[in-house]
Length: 116
Ligand SMILES: N=c1c2ncn([C@@H]3O[C@H](COP(=O)(O)OP(=O)(O)OP(=O)(O)O)[C@@H](O)[C@H]3O)c2ncn1[C@@H]1O[C@H](COP(=O)(O)O)[C@@H](O)[C@H]1O
Image (cartoon, rainbow, N blue to C red; front, side, top):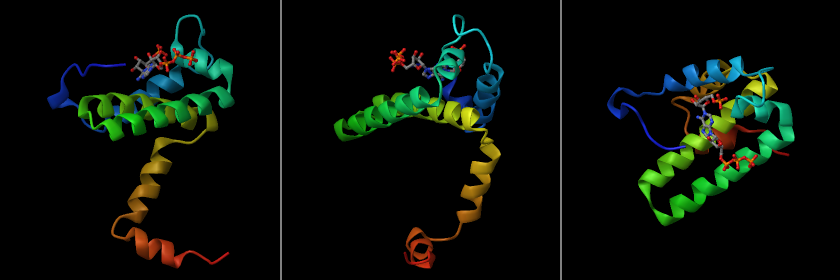
């Protein structure tokens, strides 16, 4: 999916709006909605699509095409949100996890993990 209607006005709040639309598609007619079709096909299909979009994002990253990276990243985020909805995970839980890590360096966090 390509195109940003008003890129200057767009911000990360689009993720919450998108999640609301995705939730509204749960139980909807798969013939009229790609999202409803994904839900109908189940979590294995949703997970497969997420993996494919991740690989496509990586491929574009290696090519270095910024517009293509942005487009594939949008596909990736959309499918990630579908997975969250299917798994019953609210975006707020992810935002909280990220907020809880603010100010904690990745190396320090890794060092604080219990050793296996
Ligand atoms: N953001 C997206 C979005 N990003 C990607 N896609 C779809 O994801 C699919 C990915 O393309 P692929 O070729 O990989 O998949 P495919 O071949 O169609 O599927 P498979 O055969 O692999 O199962 C395309 O059909 C895209 O249109 C999206 N579909 C929907 N949305 C959003 O979800 C909203 C609701 O969509 P519907 O549920 O379709 O009404 C839309 O208004 C958008 O805001």
